[in-house]
Length: 595
Image (cartoon, rainbow, N blue to C red; front, side, top):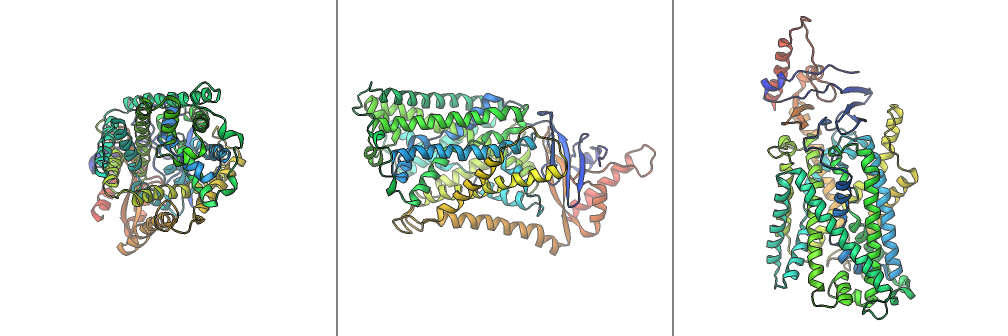
């Protein structure tokens, strides 16, 4: 059934602005209620469970994301420092050059299968940014607010980019050929991340253009390495035997352990992380189903081809033993072998620094939208802080949180084991959520079919979805397999799977927080939580959870629909809305007084 738009006079009187939603209707499905609303970025309606964050009919962040920006948002997040530094680790885990190259192909198919899941979700919710925030919220709407709460808490806790900032600082010192200490690197890491955050703070459109420009440099860098590798294979460089590693490419494969193979695949997937980044800005894309439908896969395919060509280039310039035993990265070794040591390493360090900085920008853009969407769900305190785009029409609150947490995680952990542990810890929960997303798309399909919702315009192959489920499950189970060197023989000096246990424990703690906040405290305090719709300036809207005393719950439910909108009605039937507004203000004031 549908409801008339409600008045915004309640907002002014009660100090809470409530947006109008003329095109919003509520569809009752028993235990679940769905809304159908449209955004100006798409001709398709977004059908979603009513407890989800409201549709912003006009994006407060604008519509500056086109196909080119989609490509470079994804490409810039994928291409950080991984492709320059991880090939030696992948080779060590795989045991052979042939298998190492094969892992990069496997990684592409794993990433592509998960991307198809993201794109189908995008077609269902074309006017919602935030990717996983939205997709988990809608895939698992019950228990009510469980996944929004758990994912929001986990997202806030892990919303730091300290590892990338520290790596960038290390390369800056190499570029300057200066002596360094751990604290010097930490100081430079804080400085470069602060610069990155400031560049994005004041204007969304210009910040996206800056990210695109650095993305072009990344693309040109990898194309240059790939072409140079082909020239090396042709025998036109000082490299004496460029085909050495390819004559018996799979030699050493039998010596690879399960732990080594898994660790290699984890590093490959780390390098592909970011294929979904543009899904975080969907509501800023005009016609997102069509635009992302071709540009996101194009970015992933282009990146995969360049990764494989870069690895071929590395293996053509240096022997397997040189790559494994070198004190420099595979890319640095490649430049030294091909161009000599004069200015080659310095040139490479410039390119790697730009690549790492572009990665910081791309991650900050994507994750800021995720944090903002978490805030719009109403499950985090200080809703306006997370949701408001004032004064620069940018997500200033999320930018600040990411900056603050990144600074803390740069300065607090010591170098070595603790730092590596935190990096691994931030990865494992994402594998859990990937598995839930891949299974969640099947649940969402079933609900939409039962409710007879119209086709969305994109549907992933079912075989691709099942491959995503199996590959995500593998990434969850395989890290538990012990290394051949013993329980303390992993990347850290303590038990190899500690990060898995801690990652699960943090998610469990978030679940305990949910149970305390949603179940126990309302029971003790004799109130129930209800969501209300608020406006936080310009076109930004959000849900806010409020405490309604039990003796007022029935009245609240009469006054509000499932999405939290106030029902506009006139009990006198005389066309005068004044009494209606007054009655709505009373309800709002009673609730706020009891909180």
